[in-house]
View 1: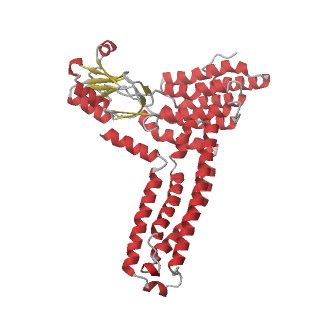
View 2: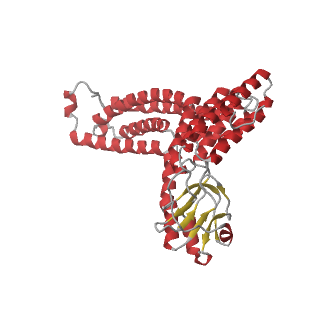
View 3: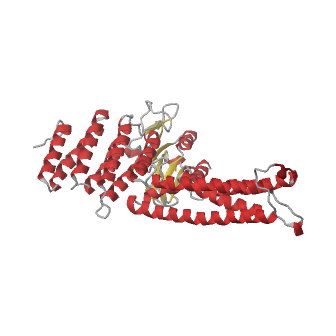
Length: 437
């Protein structure tokens, strides 16, 4: 149940319609409330306050009709700008970065304000009555409608400025990079139980004999309720090995996890274990930090494509990748074994390693930028800047491997001077690790 609620929350938070719908609902409630207040206060007091609008029923109708009509015109403009921005963002930076735009609170708030102003004006308009209908003019509600129209004008100015900012390559890349920084603590956490203990985990031969729990649907793994997973393992005295992790695609019938001892793996436990996983149509950054890295790689790959050819955008991506990987290099690698309070292994996870992040980050950019001296030089500088922060030999070797591959790719550079510059940089920055001629 907890994961289902989290999935609903995530969908609502990322949806384009939820916040505007909430704002429109609040506007409807506000309209009804202010009309009731107008009924309660009457209209005698309004004539003593010359600084607010105090016209008749026909004037109130005209004001509210103008506000509603104008707002709907602006809404069409906002929608047009939004669709144009989505198309431009998708073509320049890749379709997966559209989520950053559709989930942007500024865009959602703007749409919500205009729809709310329209809804408010219509609901108040229907309450205005002329002499033949026992005259009633909700002066407070009408004046608030005018204020909402002025506020909507300010929001329109904000929207134009905001959209012009978020579609800039530097700002979009920085936003994705910050997403990685937020998700980074989930990569190297103490997330499931205790990391230390003397009881050994089952070996590979034991796991081959374990009971498999198969997925009951297709989709990308979005979240794992690891707290409930270890609680179930402890409650039923089980040991669990995860075969999939957030970000990977799961096919119906594929093994999600293995359970020991096999005799305790009842159908009820199978269902309980499957309920610890959220699957969806797309990847999310909530427990999948590789997703943010791959977004940066995708932006860089699009920038290096012949149709776009914006190498400076790719260089910005490499800079943010370097900053992100530095944070990962400084953290301790978590143990795959998660233990309960008694030190017994309950869950064997599949944590993302620094080597995987390096491979994910640099392989495609290096391939697409193999003929670009500027890209390769920036990659070498980034790799060299990471070396002082890595503490594990395997992590250092992952960086050196990328430098070796860049040295091999140097032959694809047509200009001899550019090749010499790249080789000189490799010798200067990585010469202690590479055998260069």
